[in-house]
Amino acid sequence: MFRHNALRYTVLVLLASGALFQAFTAEYFGLEILTEILILAILVLALDIVAGFGGMVSLCHGALMGVGAYAYALFSTKAGVAPPVAMGGAVAVTGAAAWVIGAIGSRSHGIYFIMATLAFGQMAYSYVFQSPVFGGDDGLGGISRLDLSLVGIDLTDSRSFALFCLAILGAVYGASVLILRSGLGRSLTGVMHNEQRMRALGLTVWRVKADVFGLSGMIAGLAGTLAAQHIMYISPGLLSWTVSGEALVVVILGGLGTLVGPLVGAVAFVVLKHEVSALTSYWHLVVGVILIGVVMSRANGIFGWVESHSGAWIERRLSDATRDPEPEEAVSDA
Image (cartoon, rainbow, N blue to C red):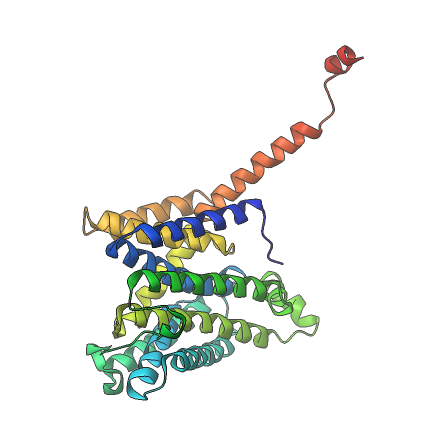
């Protein structure tokens, strides 16, 4: 079962404090970067649930985020649905699509599951790219943000929208923890470690995978609705496999199967992208070298490395504090 420890709580507090500090002190460009980090963090949390705790490495979560974005845009602009209802409808549509993908791919494993999710993502991308309903390669514009003026919040303001995304991220993180600590989450972990044993115990394995993949898809769809409101324009590139690939890179960079690690990875990835791209257009090369270094170090990402070393340090301190005194020390004490 997923548990927090002192280090994870500390990192969460530091990340939240840093985000709040940035939200209240940064100018427009800094707020845009913060919002980008927060939306990416929601997406990678969705991916970490299925990949890190279920062993289902997905290359369609970028497409699922795109489905949520397009569904929100269609509901709010073409169907004339109120933005809050459009968000709920987009999340539900994305969750249903993800559940179908999870159910179909539940009997495949490893590279075969990865290729199946990649195929689903590319089919969605191709359909949206060629369909005039979705604007084709021109995309869709004129997307509106939620209207929270009744409670005195203007989401057209960059600072207010960044704080809104931060609140959504906090709620999504809490929901992710509840999912992993529930019976469904524990069943998912059991399936990842020994699927045959769980099936022998009478568990309907495909249903567990489909249900968790559907919940993960709902989170990805929520990230898509925020992405659509952030830019107020969407294009088929949002469904490209490269978006899913970047999300997977972020999860690995931060720490697979930790929930906290992907948040660290999202911060590191976006900051690296903007800082390095200001120096060279080959920023992907720099990120790739860093990712290779992380993988070759055999550490579970940045947070995994910190957690393993801090855990070893704590164990040494406890061992030093509880070990028996040396014979000479015992004699002198006597």
